Length: 167
Image (cartoon, rainbow, N blue to C red):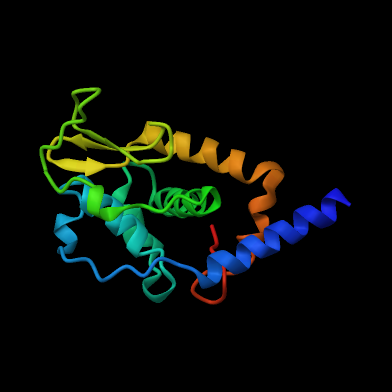
C-alpha cells in the first residue's frame, strides 16, 4: 500500500513539474556577465533548465570548478531540489549589486531563500559562483528530497524531450 501511494505521489509530482515550469524571460545580460552578480548567476542557472531553452551546459556556468559534466549534473540537481521542495525563487529580491554583502555574515555571499543558508552564491575574485561547498550541500539536500534513489524516475528521459529532467 505504501509503495502504491509513493509511486502515485512521484508520478503526480513529475506531471506537476512538467506542466508548471517557471516562465522566465531571456536573460537581459550577455554570457560574459553571467558571474557578475548574484542575480545573474541564479537567473542563468534557472533559465537554461527551462523546457523552452534547455541547455544544462550554459546553466552549469553558474557553478565553481569540476568538470563540465559535474557542473551540469549539480545544476540539474539544484533545479530538481528547488522543484521538489516547492521553492519558487523571487528574482525581484535577488541582489544585482556586484559588491553585495550579506548582512549576517558580512561577506560577499547571497543565500538562496528556503534552503536554511545551506546553498549560496559567493564572490570569488571578480566572479560570483555557487561554490564547491554549496554544491556538496545541494547533493545532500537532493538525496533528502529524493531518498533511496527515487529520483530515477526524473532521470528516465531528457527534460527537453519529454516531461522531466535527466542527469
